[in-house]
Image: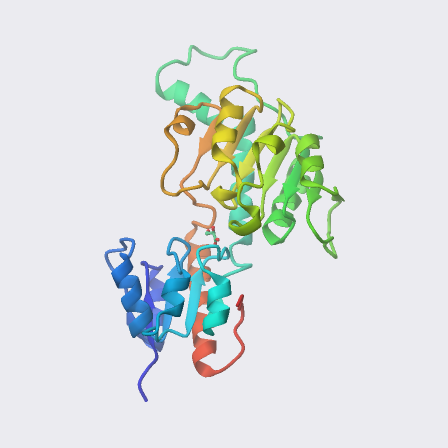
Length: 320
Ligand code: DGY
C-alpha cells in the first residue's frame, strides 16, 4: 500500500523530519524559504496532507480549488489565524493545531519581556555597548519593581494563565484578567474584570493572550491604550494584529505609557522603523515558542494529527 503524501512547507527540527520520513511520502522544503504561491498550490493539489507553519496563508482560494487533493492541514502553531477555517469547513478540509506544548515557553517569554521592559534592559544595554555608561549612579536608569504590582491578562486561556501563575508565584504580583469565561481549578488567586478597559486602566503590566485575526484585530485600540497608566507597560506574545501599532508607537513616543515588550508584529517580518528607533520598547522576532524542546514537541503533535487522520482515528488537536 502506498504511503500518504505529505508536503511540509518549512524546515522542522530534525527529529520531526525523521519521523515524517518514516511515516509518509514527504516533500520537504530544505531551503526553508517561504513557499511562493505556485508551490503552495502544487502542495494542495499533489499531497494528501499539508503541514503548514503559522506564516503560510491558507485562504479560501487554496482550499476550494477544484484541483485540490489535500484533505488535512496540520498547522505547526497554536494560532490558526493564517487559515480560513470557514472555508476549510465548507470544503471538508480538516485543520489541526499544536496547543499545550508551547504554553510554558511562551509564558516564559512573556515574563522575560515584562522584565526587559520594566528594568529597561534594551535601553541600558544599548547605552553600555555604545560606551555611554559612566559608572554606577544611584538615580540612573530606575525601572519599576514588580512585587505588589498588578499584572492584567487579556485572554485567560492556557498561555495567559501560565503567565499569570509565574507573575504571581515568582514576583508576588496581583493578577487581574479579562476573559469571556471564568476558568475552573486555578491554583493561584486571580480576579476577573468585566471588560478589557477595566484591566487596561488598572494594570501596571498588561499582557496580551488573545488569538489574532477576526474580531480581535485592532482590539488594543488607541482608545484602550489611552486608558493605561503612564507608568504601565504592555507585553505582547500573542499576535501583532491585535494591537493598533501606530497608536502604540505614538503612546510610547509621547511616553503616555512607560514601555513595551513585543514578540509579534502586525505585518511580520516588517517592523515599523519608528518602533525600532524607540528605546522604551524591547523587540523580539516572534521567538515565543523557540526552544528546541518546544519546537520539537510542536512538530511531533502536528505529525500525531496527520498520523491519526490517515489512520482514521480522532485527531489529538483538531480545530476544524
Ligand atoms: C503559535 O504557535 O501560534 C505561535 O505564535 C508560534 O510560536
